[in-house]
Amino acid sequence: MAEESGPERDLGTPGDRDDLLGAFRDVGAVGRSGFAAAKHAGEALRALVAADIALARSALGRALAFTAVAIVFGVSAWLLLMAALVAVLGAALQWSWPLALSVVALANVAVTAWAGWRAIGYFEHTRMKATRRQLARLGIGDGDADGEEGTDAGEVSRP
Image 1 (tube, rainbow, N blue to C red):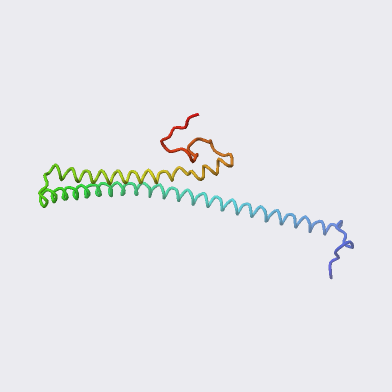
Image 2 (image 1 turned 180 degrees about the vertical axis):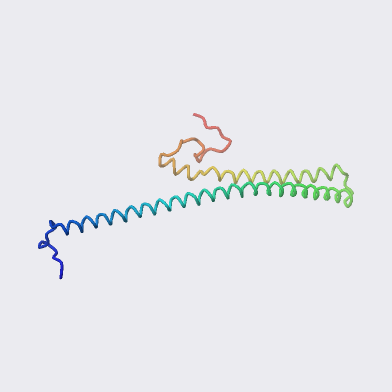
């Protein structure tokens, strides 16, 4: 009971035509079910992203609150340590109060200036100069002077 294939087989018979139409219907049904599955997966992914963003937003607020508490207590601890240093300089080394306060203040100003200088250096990395250069090579972007290598942050570009 082998089926005929090749040139001997006549596709014009009604049974063969129904088999071919049935195969097309099966392929169409599988395609529709695949599309529906992809649609459901996309909806599930969208729901997951929305839930993750809501969780991140809530966590950000709490993180900021605890960061504020940490800053307040860190500053108060630093002030107490500096007051203790002034007291030690005044009592143990017999320095005058204005001299002890000035030395501690100058040390704090020096550390503040150093930290500010380092922060500015790290903020330069946020300008994404290498990415801007590559985008400019591709002709994408506004082509402003910020992406040029020869200009400094404080330098004004002149025509």
